[in-house]
Length: 464
Image (cartoon, rainbow, N blue to C red; front, top):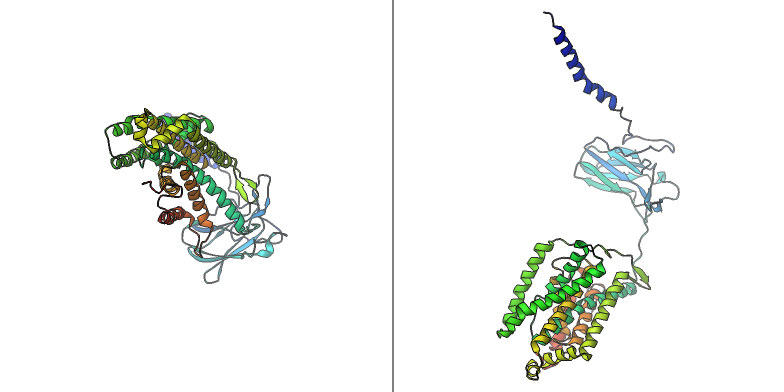
């Protein structure tokens, strides 16, 4: 049968179309460069050019040798080429050898999972390069998973000498002072509120969280510097304190609600605020855009970052200003009068509700400042204040409920014990584990209250 010219031309074109991808693929695909096998044995000083190609095997070791004692221009450890390694199985039979390439890496294929001994030939190390310390030239490895099984030998790593105890203790004291000052700001706010209203506010921890979250919102959300964001957060916390008293606590007082009922209301408010924070802020821990990580400066045996100096100075100045203001200003004297006897203050013509509102504003602002500084020092989380609440209560109770100086003193003691406890052993007992370091201050609180129930600076006739 004869084909028509059109059909013949179509068949020829179809053949070229079908063959074109094959030809293009063959033309574009370069011939694979030979890669060094994992069992390649080199003689003399010959070094494989590179070992970056992973072998097409189900099981293999990936050994990387880096000299930590020598750094390149970017500060990275330099690779060590030309080092021989061999692998034996559990029965002592050699199953593979290899030599590190210019990148300091070699891949050695193994037959499967099981126990293997990887041995480094110390004689093949370059002159002046040795394993760190008394490091062994052998690594016994049990392979469970298929694919790459990474392995390293420590070379050029300097052993860190034990830190002297006086340095550890000095650093713990500084950290305890910083921690105590953060607690003192929140404790001062709690003591002011309790002293004038008698309310044990279980939502006080959420006021700490509010300061941290507002700082994050102003910083990350609006792009403001951390300092300006912190100032706005404190102002916003003061406004929230005013709103709290006008919208919740003031109406409850005017209706003659008892302190126990108000305390239960504060527990409900704490749960509500915590849920709102979790819903709006999220459950993850977040950081501010500035002062996240700073290099610490050395001052004798202690290390302090610039932001830690700023945190402690701001806290000390704030506490000093509040204490001086309470002692010398008209508002401070009015607060102390309401704290001592609200009925007598009211009968003498003083606007007790107005004074209490100002106490809520000041106390919430101080507590919010504690959250701002805590966010700068660490990170922001919707439970950051809740985790600190128990220590704030302990500090105020230890120093004496309702006393300003007692709140500050108790906070400093709590902070110091929390940080020093994990590094000091008392009466032969082991130091408190860092994971439960808050147990130490609470134990101290119990012991002191057994001897002095009113607290260190509290009055014997005070009931709290």
